[in-house]
Length: 199
Image 1: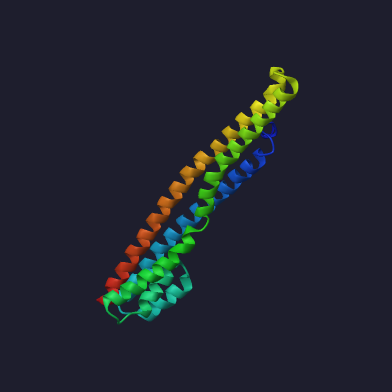
Image 2: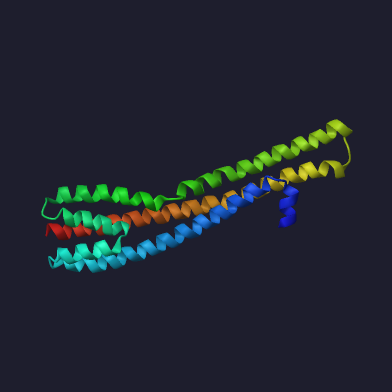
């Protein structure tokens, strides 16, 4: 691997760095989504029975202790208890939009890495071909050995950029779908709480 990076030229370093960042973001977001989903379920199982028994003060204490995005939505709903269903729902939706934003953290950066990785590979291709043509300009057609360095650099960086970009695009799509599922679950739990408060 180290020899391939050396043969690909200095643009292989930012491409390798992009792959490390992408892997780190993917693992961090995946762990976060798994943890948050589990916290959503635990919180809903604790709060809903209390609200059904009209023990809202205990539910508020549990939400304060949890501190998760869903807990903040539940707190907004519990503070709005006593209002009409439409008013509680409006408060919940506004809070939900605000709490969903931190869950999107780093997804934009992951999409950027997927975009720039093949571009870095393409830049390496262009620089490698320029190097090959410079050899032709200074030495005539030269030999395969003299031309091989520039052409090899061009092909290696292109392959490396695409090798990073393809799995990163797939990871970005996967994480986006997991995020969408989380937001839908948060909405479902919130609407169930709104219904309980209305009752």
